[in-house]
Each structure stands twice: as structure tokens, then as C-alpha cells.
Image (cartoon, rainbow, N blue to C red; front, side, top):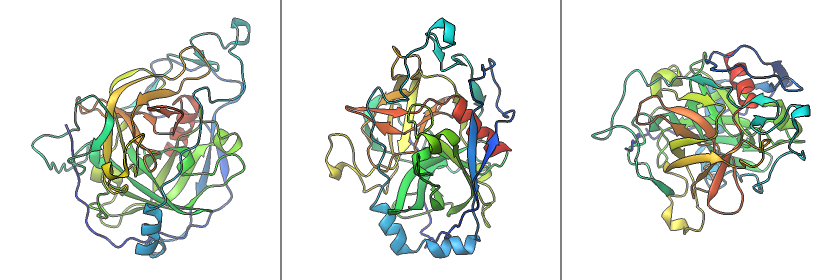
Length: 370
């Protein structure tokens, strides 16, 4: 079933966020529940965090209508990758602890999970909540973007050295009640790069309207390995902790938050949400210039089940530029909607990929919560 959200038309301005020196934080005990204990890799997974400065008023002043229009016409380019993307390693032998069924030293059955939190006051726009249940690798518009669970997905605006850009992102449950999950390449330039700035998140964005207003970043977090290697196989996910909204308080209370289920690759009935401006082998007229939320639905598979070092998730979906950072979701029909992956990149063909949501995803969510 589909949902939709209506957005209030708000002239939005985001802050010119200046940054303080980035710090790395060690992994702490996560709030999610594990159904198996992860083996420690050679190096403890860590996440890199940067605190933003500036007031909400400065943030709003930054995001003039002109800057927003520039961002909308410049969706973030997803990283280019081939199906065998990853660090140059050979599958390990039993002697080096990386045998078949073992992802880089991590128990393949290790799981970190948390339940979804629906909004306190649901606003249903249609006779039923949810998104379409049709199996469709061909993306289609979300009919009710302001209904749960669609409302927890939105558009992410930010500044890069190449100008104003946009990605997709979604609210994830956390101790802060104000966390947003997306792709690392929407937050940081990767190897040799730095954190982007001036992040503004608009949940349920549609046609220039912001029904729950605009939310501005307080902290930005990516795996430290993303800044060192930019590895699409394991590292392309990250989070923002947003400032409280003067009217709506927290994202989790206002629009709800998806739970998460990290550590597996094969899921059935998965929904991918995002804001693409184009698509794979489709005319631009099939899209709405990234101004409307769209969805695909299907099953995820292990992108390289022959390679124990590559646990990316793959799903058939034709969404293109602008959809980066959108969630891979399970549990829509059970109302326990959980993020299992994040739209990261495409190689050749219809499939889109999520980085493995394993140790690095755990390190990010741990730093969000601590």
C-alpha cells in the first residue's frame, strides 16, 4: 500500500555550517538487540563524527529559494562501481579466519536490530496505510507520502565543493529521537575528502512543500573507513543527528522512525524509497525532477554470494540520480518497518546496491546513540 505526506510550503534556509575538527569514536554497546555475538575484526570498527556550528536561524537563511533550486537540479552523483567492487583481497582460507560464510572476520549470523517507532499522531492520507505491495523493479510514485511509513523518508539538501546537492534519507530510531540515515557519499567526500556542510532534511518532501518543516544538522557521522578508503562494499552509510525543531520537537515523535535490522543480505518484500530525477533506461518524463517520492519493491539478494568478502545487498530497481541514500525497508506490512540497507550505487544493469550493513553500520549507529 502507498502513503503520502503533504508538505507546507516553507521558504527554507539552511545554515552555513562551519565545522570543528573531526573526532573518531570507539564503538560502544549499541542499544539494539543482537541475536549473535560478532567476532572482532582485526581493527575495531569506528565512526567519524563532526559537530556543526551555527543557529537554526542561520541555517534557514542559508537555504534561500535560489539555493534550493540549484540543489534540486544537481542530485548527488552516485559512485561508479562494478559488481566486484571492494578492497583488493582474496577470499580467505580457514587458517586466516575468513572462510566461506564469514564476512571479513564477522560472524555472518551476527545481527543488530531495533524496532520501528510510528509517529505519535498518525495522519493517514489514504484509506489504508503502507506502500504498494506489487513486485515492481520499475519505480512508481508514492501515492501517500504523508502517511506512515512513507512520512519518515525525505529529501536531504547539503553543500559540497561542487555546489548545492540533494540526496534521499530517512529517520532511524535512536536515543536522540532525531537521527537520519543515508549514504556516506551524501555526507562526506570519501578518501581524501571532507564532510559536506549545511545539511537540511525535509521529511515527506513533495513538490516544494514541507509538511513537517525543515530540520538542520547538529552532528554528521560516517565510518572512519569511508574517509580512508571510500569502500562501497562495506562503508557507504552514515547518519545525521538533527537539531530539535522549534515547532515539532523531534523527528521520531513527529513523523516516526524506522527500526533497523543489520547483518543479513537476503530479504523478501523489500521497499526502496527515494527521490530520483531519472532512471535506468527510462525517459526523464517518467519522473518528476526529483520532487516526488518514488518506490521500488522486490527481494534483496547477496550481491556476490560466491565471494565471502562481499556482503552487499542487491535489488532490481531503476531509480537513478537523487535516490542515493534512500532506505531499503522490510516489515512494511507488519508495521515494524526496518532499514536493512541504503541506496549506494549501481554497476551495469538494473540492480542497485547497498553496502554491507555490518560492523561499520553498527559503529555509526553506536556513535549516534552515544
